[in-house]
Image (cartoon, rainbow, N blue to C red):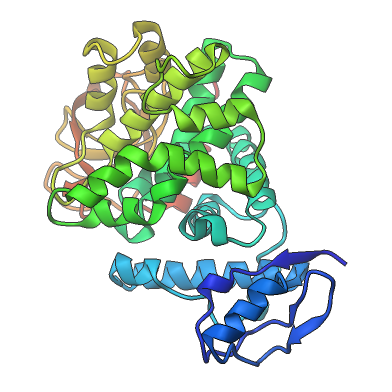
Length: 402
């Protein structure tokens, strides 16, 4: 029988446990429903390398992810979320939700956030990260436009947290740009893995910093400076031994570091660029988000990246990627839903009329046509209309195939 180590540090004294707790040899230490009674009791669990069954462990992990998601949606303080202990209840649905490689982007975001938040205390993190990597590629290959739409929309929703959305969007941007650049599959695989885990060492505080009303303090500044090395150390503790992934994570802020692997130069530069791009397009309470077109143009023409790589990213994602907002020449506000023939001509759906009234009829328009041309990008923070993703996907089905 396969067992999973349990996150003993995240167990609250006096709180009943929802699983049987076993030693690594299978000896029963605590029955389901019994609590840890003291810190000395907790030390004994460490000594016996406390575990639980594979099925219970996975369901318990999902219960934790569900709990964190509910706390975020309720507006809980992120420091309280970061201190949350493992839940004492597992629902039947938590067992169903542990089926491998299932769910959409928001399910993936919730699962990844749970791993990033728990860091080295997570249940079976390496296997679960591999499953997320596979699911990222599966969803992206199935429908690239819907993938970009879901992630750019999630980036604008602060209630979902930031760290996991940032990681998923970086992974997608890297994969699309690397494909555009012609990087071979074996080179792209560690790039996706690194994008998902490069901020592991500061994930909880990354969410705090994204929502705080004041500039980062000295302690946070030190954490930011050290997080790449911390992330690499944590991945090694998971059992990650791919030198390319570890190199990308360690040097994603210093892609030209002399200690870095020469063979990874292009991948490091790409990950660094994607990290900057996604960060610029995400809002903070201390600053507004840049529109994707502004962020891309500043990287392509602002000297912060290799011109060819910046151009490839612009072509891969688009100046107005699905999920971002624009104002049309006729005065309507629209959401981009599909990349067009050129980076600056996406297909869009108008959601606000030129009379400032919401529009309920979803019709796709080609901004390559002069009457539907884009006049300007629109910051998502000004959008008050909720976009229905299901209606967007149905409307996209009517776009002529090229």
